[in-house]
Image 1: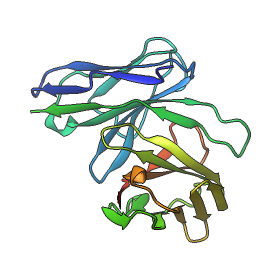
Image 2: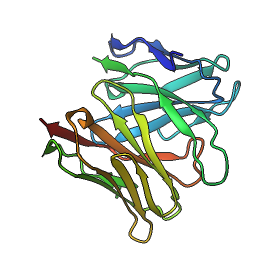
Image 3: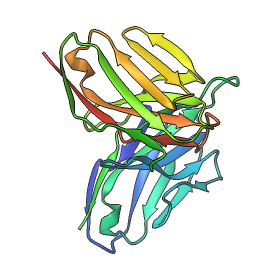
Image 4: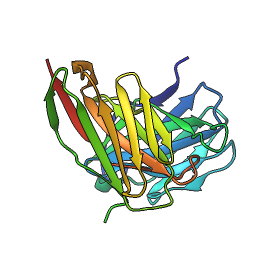
Length: 117
Length: 112
């Protein structure tokens, strides 16, 4: 099992350019997430998908769009990149916890390091 | 005030030391508490989780939750150079979905 894979690993964009970050998981998880990680800020949720065909905004959705293409794939699109979107982007997927005292275990991909000039 | 606070470090300790990592939080509704380990240039991986208050032990790792003080801790006994990483705390009120809040992480270096 590859787990959660992300492409590309690194990307440099100019302000105003667009790009799509790809994410795929092979663990048959229903839930998938996109986070960004900035120094001193912790992981912040951009978008969440509870199942194929559904997406919800997270804490910082402005400037991003997502597509849950199928159960395996969840992509993140920057339509017009801005320097404030320079960050490390992580995709994650989770299996549902069982019982009232268990929790979703989120499995993270290796990340995409994006720089917007 | 941030919802979850964590000393960013870096924290440097000699091999074999006991390490204490801590987070404080403000939302009294949190009842699921997690610790993630993140190696440099890798994604976070779940290390431990605890439901509600109390202690949980797994090998060299012990997680403690004190809900009355809104304070959680991760202890690492007999620390090893392989424990050098950033440790993120995370918490949630419902334990699933988009409701996780992460701390900024503490960078730990264990020196041989």
